[in-house]
Image 1 (spheres, each protein chain N blue to C red):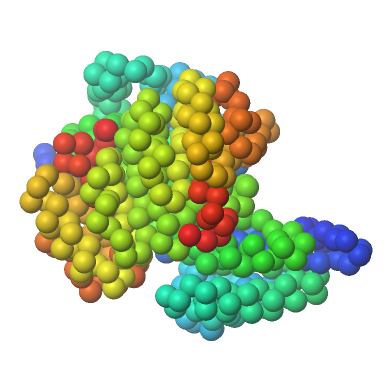
Image 2 (image 1 turned 180 degrees about the horizontal axis):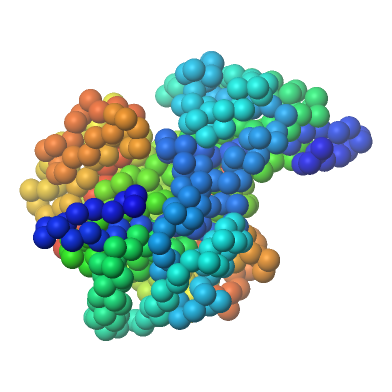
Length: 249
Length: 249
């Protein structure tokens, strides 16, 4: 089987491959993601069932044959208590390690890219620590897809890009030069809106809000006042200095 | 023809599609990139000839039929004088607009993703201003591919990500919390190395340098002292605070 390795003790074990399926449009999946999903022994999804897993629903549109694959579904905790979250991920990781020890090559589906704010990386660390081979296959990030959708440069020339996640702590971010991308703002969108409305009074800003990019419910608004505080988790806010043309620093 | 639009005056013109081909591995191209390259009337490349165009050489590995496509090659200036660069891009844009006016749907090949430090965005602005339809198709960025290669999270939890390009001005970047990604350092790699060697004396850092990621000449080193100052343009340096585990904030 491709990807299988021999570890100390001579037992054959599988390999864990974290595959980014991109931001929503199944056509934004890579050739490599498609091939590995087709070739693997089983699929691991970060949700209680296929129907509730956005990453799975993206993949099945590009690869209908995925329906025949063996699926292991794990409901990842969405809790703010980090220690409790890590404990729950440790329990899930143990179960995944047991699957991989049965000589199974598994693809773990992640939304966007696995290296950008993905819970998968915690599992990867645990699986690696158990001596099992791992791999990451890049996916299109949501912020690249959002910028493509509205046709603006996130970065150009010598300008900087700052990606801010969560927004518990945003008061310092107006200092950042170049472009700011606020991701996963969720319940903090109201605070972010207030913050950017105030900042806009002091200096000219270009503010783009993209909600559910690439999905049917996609919405794009311009300006701080237009940010919909209830838009939800999949909202990306891109802030550029206004004296910075769309395509230059 | 798909993608053709009618502009004021009723003339049919083509459409310009900026397509990111990803960081090097042709298997990291998206299904959409593949389809659009196959469907388009012609290909525009940012180099004097096919053989010198990295983006073209990536695409031709995934799509051998690209050899039959009409190619328009434009040598983009790599000059530090920004005004002169923009003037030269204006001249190239005029030529591209003339191609599109001949009812041709053109794919412009870009390395990585078009919204992340790509000269294509200047052309896009000019083509848009001429009233011609444009589109951007996302590609895998080099920094995502580099992080996947070494299996680290660029961002996780509430940590921030800072992408710094060019490195003319890096003295303020040690203030940034979370992860820093230095791209397109080129001739400034020596300065960046010095800067990170000094910073490493003051606080523990995890420093990864990835050179020519995904290509045969790929090289990965760890630590500031190991940065090869002559490694060249396609070098990415990722700096994480050492108290920040690979997969957590």
